[in-house]
Image: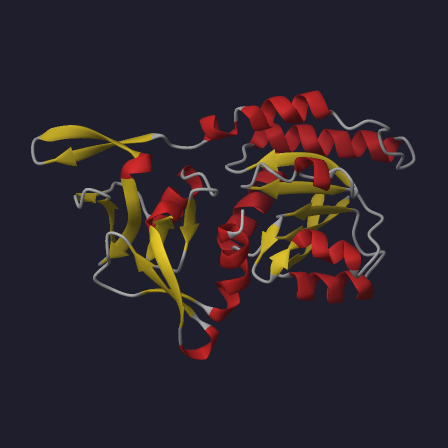
Length: 257
């Protein structure tokens, strides 16, 4: 039995990840799910022998997961599952044995789990050289995993809309909309959760339950009440785009890349 710990700040993603892990390898059990650097450090410090394998996102609500390694020693292998393609080399300087880009699929998880079982079968020895050519090839084509165009219905026509031309997505009354830089309002066939999986995370940020905004659309960022941030968009939005206090570190990290 493989005892898993998932470090992921999006509950839906964490549940989906474990569902796919179970489909790829039935002989697993989820010990716990952690959603922040602080919570991870506390749990891993208190339970150093209670897990066999970590699945770890990189950007958490209170910073990068690499900060965990500064505060606690982790001897178990780690499979990084992240939307960001620019941390692979840093990941393999830790106990990383694989680096999976979101949106992930079952064959990728099967490959990563097979690698873990192979390493464990070799008394836990790590490979001397990470598969960097494979990783480099994967990262080189990272953008191919994300949406470049949407085909949107406008009256009696289907119109192709480039993702780069969309300033933000928002939802109202359970309907999702896209708003373009040239001020077109377009109805989408996806929920924000589905859109988030299709958009490259370097370019788009899930600000809150209502908005996903493109980096180029952010004109200003203002301090707001209770530690929150207020985003000023160009073109402007009718409603405020607020970043919660808990999401502020992740937003700042995203903006600084």
